[in-house]
Amino acid sequence: MTNEKSHEVQVHPIPRRRLRKRWIFVAAIFGFLWLAGWLVFRERSLAVLRLPNGQRFTVHKLTYGTDHCYWGTPTPLTAVENWANSWLSRIGRQIDAMNPTGTFRTEVPTLVLWHTFDWKQKDSNSMPHWYVLTDQNGWRTAISTNWLLNTPPSAPAGPGQPVTPQWSSSVLPSPSPFLQFDLLNAQGDRLGGSRLKYEVPLSLIQSWNIQTFPATEKVGNMTVTLNGLHAEWAERDATKPVVDDVIKVTPDFTVTVDGTATTRWQPFTEGAPFLDYPWKPTNPANGTIESVLGTRARFHHCTVSPYDKAWKVYLPLICKNPDDFGAPDRVTIEGVSFENGLPSDPNGTAPVKIGGSTVKFLGAGRAGSFEYEGLGEAVYPIPGVQKLEDWSVHRLEGTFQLAQVPDPLGNVPNSFSLGPGGNRTQYPMTVNLKFTAPRPHFVISLTESGDRFPFVIAKDDNGQEIEGELINVQGLLIWLAKKPCDEIQSVNVTLLLQVPRHFTFVVPPPAVPTRK
Image (tube, rainbow, N blue to C red; front, side, top):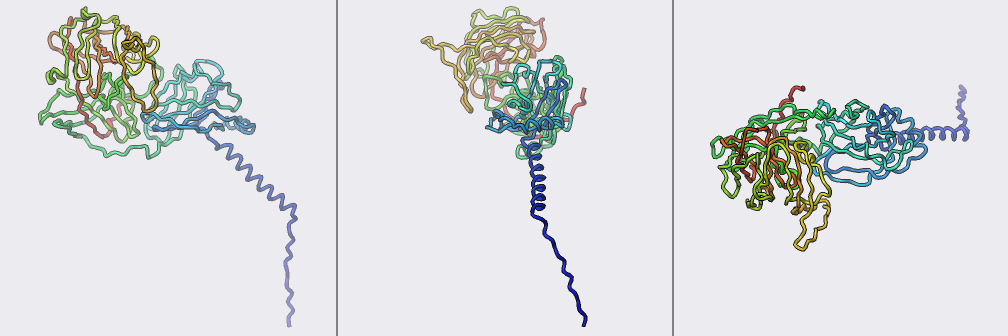
């Protein structure tokens, strides 16, 4: 009988002190990793740009749409966070002591860029005056930030202590997965840049059924066929070192009324003044283009990217033939002389009623000065003398001043502010207007209500129409000839008020023009 010895393995327990050290070491490793991750990813900034003079421009956040989160007063950073910032800034990262405190709304979909800027000196070569956003297709939007020179931080920012973020808005070029952000000085020299990753939420991108050319829409007895869209680069402003991409779009369309082709109906694609303050029509009279992101632009100044999959084209048409309208819809003033176009009445011609509107012809002249003081219409008075360039896109030079008209007892109504969704009630105002026009011009006073829009036709003694554009200055229509036309002695002026016929198409964008 064989004796078998059992071999037992004896396990010696690890001392409790050594086991405790191991757990402490593992916990320290996990704690360090958690702290490092928390420091790096807590309120992570999109970009931190180091400018040549050592200043720092930080892009905290991008938001798009009509609801935007804004930032409140920053909370102090801890000593550890300040120390971490001194190292993280070397790799373009930063800890932001910001907390969202509320929201605000914009009337139209807008891209808001939240940023802070710690500046030390007003050096024009190093101060950021522009930022440019470029999408994946190369379509760019330039925004001026020269107001930073006059907007210093509310309190000096210490090391690693960001100031309260400010915001600037622009249109979004397209639903691009990234935007190239470049910061430039006043001369257009690049100070720095970074690629910002930001994708518009799919819920904000509109989905349309795209029509093919030719696209046809019918309203009443009118049928409009949109045959195509043509695009060319708009003229660049030579006075600005940095400009965004702008194209001029021309629609190719045909109109039939009761089955008969006609050229009397034409679109409002430029020069319509009544979209601007104080008139707020229910339906836009200007031809506009809408992107899938909801941003809009006019035909003659289109900033909507032609790289989009589709455009929504709003094409309102008006009839440019005054013979198609009866007396209740028009007023004609004959024999207006540019040499001495001022009427005998210093306050203008006698008022004429057209529906709910009152029309008065105030005067005319060749290139030179014009001065008017009388009634206009606005929402609230504007204190002091205002430059006219803000309303006329630099076509005129001059000033105007608004004041509320006293009531029969001589009391001047108090001014008021409008809250969100408040009604904009128009009030009669006294207007003091002085301007210098570069070409022949005349001025018409008009009070407008409802969806009736003004259109001016000026013809010479031979019945030839003179091209011109309308500019709205607080209820005063200034017609400005597009050419000098010094040989013309007098004109016949017809003011039409009509409701445009609106047509809407969802079509492919035009071919992208070759860059100049």
